[in-house]
Figure 1 (cartoon, rainbow, N blue to C red):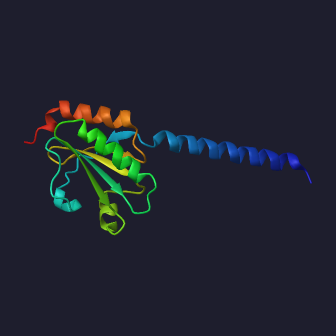
Figure 2 (cartoon, helix red, strand yellow):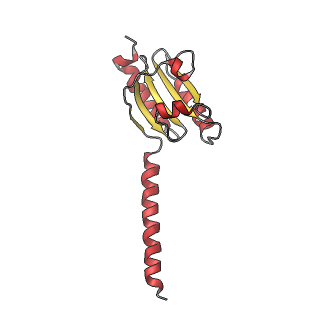
Length: 146
């Protein structure tokens, strides 16, 4: 049996898997532009959003990273006047997972004062990325409800 082709195939598979993993990891926690869709508090089963911005965190009972994400988002919202953090448990709400195209938890949406989605973050959010997007939003005219 010739081991060289088997070793070459194994090395190629390892290289491809590593590349895919690195690409996936680089996309985690990065804030991407939002759809602009408008979300109402009642849709999520919450009383109200923040006056100027809201960080909506989608989580589940089984999400290991969600508690840390919740603490981070609550801290960041607390650093900004008029911002709020809202956590929505999708465990028993698959309709919301479908509506907001949540394929992993945590997933975070940044909403402006009108409830429009301005950014979306899949996975554990990077604090600097959230802070930057939140600062940009609060400086923009979208932060003031019209």
